[in-house]
Length: 253
Image (cartoon, rainbow, N blue to C red; front, side, top):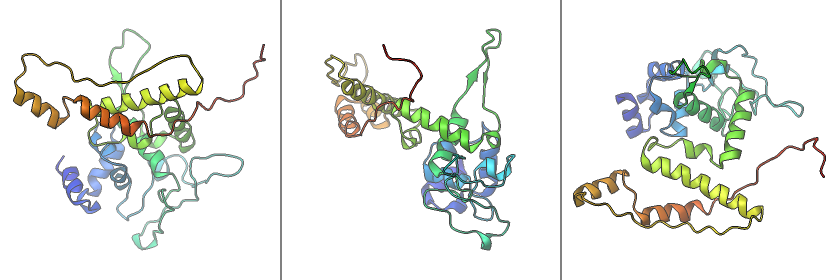
């Protein structure tokens, strides 16, 4: 997509024109790259032609009252938002939030999952995959809880999902290693009797020309043990939290 490529090179919002941003928000299959290039790119996608940023629910969903979170209820918007019709009336959003009051990272993860996730029917006769419903129908309050649950159980952050190398072996490997680190650390915290040593020996690649191997290394198709070890050493500096279980009514024996 030339418009997205032009924006990536220039980092100027004007290069990702409003028409393409609107199509990306309204059509799940259009320009999926807009959802995983970067969080900043996602923020630009949700910017209107008057330079205000609104999630699709607040842009044209059932509720445009911009109800913020309270001490009693979580609505999915940290601050009171607003929508205006003129660029000169736009007020700077709170740090890390859109003008509708929703957190940028929550909207970005929702957008990524909406663009990249497909599901199947439980009816075995229906073998096709289905995209999610229109983005405007997804409530911010639901968004926050589902996003939090996904991050809690996998140990992944929003920034891990949204990366320009999405779909590559490098991306898939990094996602898997982060989750491996998360589970190892949780098992250690539970004092599970085990011994795990993670090693990355280079695999033998027989009958493959050296120039193709080098090309594979440069493009990320083939990862060397040294590259993997560097990634792993960086990943293991991440802090891992235990699963946030809720208190149950089950009686202890």
